[in-house]
Length: 203
Image 1 (tube, rainbow, N blue to C red):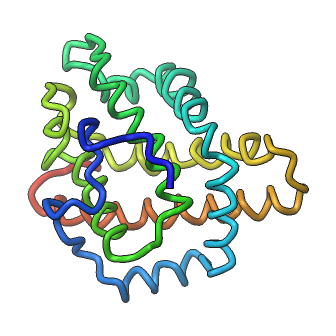
Image 2: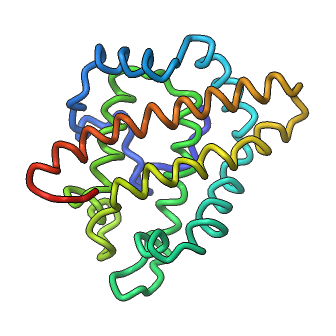
């Protein structure tokens, strides 16, 4: 599988330092059933991974530079607390964002993947945000904004899935599988935020 991010960029998938997810594999199975995520969807996602492999930089540029950058309360999470741009932070987090697309499509949804879902969530909360890149940005990303931005993650993807000339029905199938994967991951990240809600309000 192509990797766009490395350990130097803060990408630590499969590293033994990653905490075990509080979500069990049985709970993951149930979440898959709830969202309607099937083995067929996994096949379509793998195909999507091949289609998107050389497009991830353009996709993340659109998300970050065209959408997030135009929404001040979202853009501030990759800047210092006084609003100064942090180019190094943005560059590394963009590489991890690109890698997330590929991981969503091509990784097995096993214990390692589940553990890294927990790590992704932690890095958006006050428990670990800013630590990976050693910056002083906002202390956390509110969960409500993550959920709301999932609409953009889904709505903008279809043209990229159609870019290689696949038949419409295949593009639709890949897009449905992508949407289910995003929804599944948003649900997984909620566990970390809900655990934190006992001491902090990061909604």
